[in-house]
Picture (cartoon, helix red, strand yellow):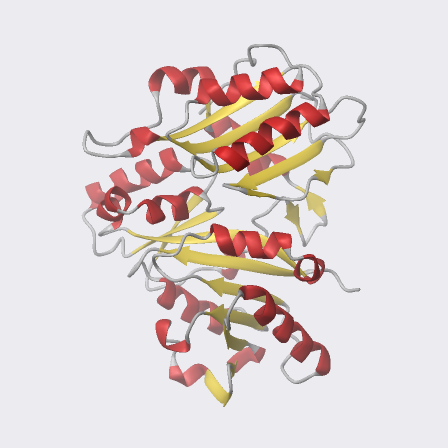
Length: 350
């Protein structure tokens, strides 16, 4: 079977510029399948449309657009089968556009827990658009907007040309506090280099190598102890970001596999609403190779075993983004269940 096709999840709050970005990507990223809830919800430029055929539309550049019928899995299966039969161009990647008020977690759940889909598609990354003019208010008022930022691998800051410079600066600082690992790219009129939204996951498809340091960006997170004392970065007294914590945990000793999975299962089962996202590279007892773990709320990604450690540091390293959950509690849960030292080693953050 061919290598799984990369999928980009494009999310962002209402009016944040997903439509404009999507129109640009269709023009500049050939052989892409676009999946959306309804054609009418995202107004793709009519000049890009070549032929309508039921729930699918052929676009210029060998792209295809498809409405999501029911759940996501049947739509992805129908697209794949049409591609295999030659009914549509042989697209090389897919972009799933969520509605503006959607929590992206169910889409991630669908992609990861359907074995047929997972064998043919892989999640390459989550891209979130944020409106520079209204982003602050949206983050204050809507938890969905916060979740969209927290799960992002890349944040596209739109409409910065319309917002005062001080507003843009404050928003960038706030976004960096909510999700330290996500690089923030300023986008004007939807224009961006398509490479900016590709190869955002653990693996670089071009080099066929893992890039743990780039993917986790551990140094950008506060250690759990510092987060417990000082909280997450807050840019104004009115911001609700004190409920959001982005922090790191480092455990020195090799971890018991079953204890670690018990701790993570407790978090994903009983604290799913609080656990926005975590990533980890861990040293397990009895394993000579490092294991990469990743989760979003109740969704645990399949573990990935690396060929070798990316550097000389063979301690287990975790980064978390949580809501209404104390870093000290998470750190103690991991340490106690996995048989590690009762206190994590301090780490540095930038």
